[in-house]
Length: 484
Image (cartoon, rainbow, N blue to C red; front, side, top):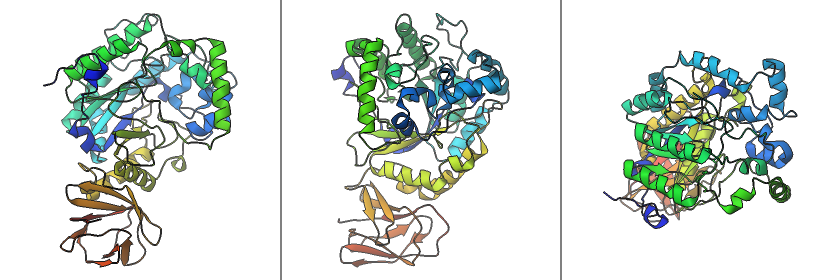
């Protein structure tokens, strides 16, 4: 077994394990005290919010998990809601109702649902930006004594998830912690410049090592940035890889540098914000974000975003089913992606060397996954049960995208000599043409869930005869030998 040293040269030798590349689909879980008020602005996606309302965007994001900051900005929707509904109570007051709801929590029920959805791994938020830890941490908090649950949420869920045969990963907000830096944040400059110093870096390192030692997470998913310089960060990576040999880390580990320290000054933040605001005004509005590339990572994590081409390195699209990760009680069924939209986005990601980490935002009051989210997980799982052969364990083919003459998009995956064509939609005719696809003369073509189908070659195109089809978001052909 390789022993890793805390250097970029040594860490760069770490390979993404097959289990992660094969898995394709994981569940993200954002659940915490914010799920009691469960409120955030409805101004569209996070990208749209920053593009249209930059000067107060951090307090207007659609993310309910950012509620603790939003209520500190008087002109925000959340602050107005908090005054009207909660009489400006301290955010800490949501702790007791959250713990009361926790009494109804059944981690095994969650794990069964995630298994049914077709997920192969689960990533739990252990500590978000509010700094509240979901495990009984032995690391003393310098500012808030006992700022954690006594019940071991992290451990109980890990046991339930692993009992279902799923891998278990952990999220940690390393870059932002409002229990150390309570300054109200309005702009991206404010947000980037709010990474705490002082006692926080040592605290974050100690907590992450505690998570590694106690729970051996298969995924170590940090958020925003990392509060230590590069050399200390590399020691954390080496410790993790040597403790969990098949573990992976994401791409949100940007270490502290002299440039990032400058962002703590208001004049620098103002200069930064002016430049970013002007750039956003001059470019098309984006729905999501792609984090900057740090010195070391195993996989990239575009958020509410995707890549247009097959990527040489592994990546993971991460998003909620609605515009928020945490539960938003204002979301109606129409605010959630449909099962079809989730499947189409998923197929696109897999064809381009990506995974999907789809978020679940449970309620705080009763620790239940909302019915709208359950329905989508069940629908997704039903599709995966039929078509998983074209997903799990596959790799990108020579090209990701194709088309049919009637404008149905196609996405490709491959496994050995087999190519899978995922048609994003249900054909209306009893024949389907896959353009620019040439199987070998002795190839077999199978429609997953139905069996072998008749096919013929028409010039450069493959024409298949279809059986009567069920209503489905996408149909999948498995082609044993493809020449081009």
